[in-house]
Image (cartoon, rainbow, N blue to C red; front, side, top):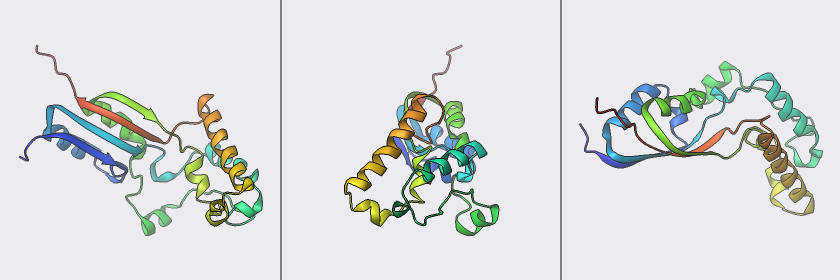
Length: 176
């Protein structure tokens, strides 16, 4: 068995793990009693395949963006097909939506904070990055509008945060 660790970190990697039981069980086993697990992870829908209402929201937001700021004037989000997933990266977000539950199964989550992405993560893939990089008044307005929209939707409970940052420790076990 490996030597115990005081700190284990996942930074954008746990969402590629198919067997969360095995991975988090191993981390629990090698973490010292006072050790910490730090994580910065995508926890949105598996395979970045959004429910229909979220797809509609993403596309509605995209329609409000002037054509010059999109990768194409008619750009829109569509979920990847299983064939596309298998061809590009079958591990991408394979069990991402289950990460929060599995973390709580194996650890005591001491602190966790969502930091968005429910709208912006898919949307920015459809934006013209070169045009936005100019950072003129138009680009700044588009960026501010989209960030503000995501923040408002999250604050109203209409959009989940797809990314979390957190700290967890070993589960406290009863002495009985």
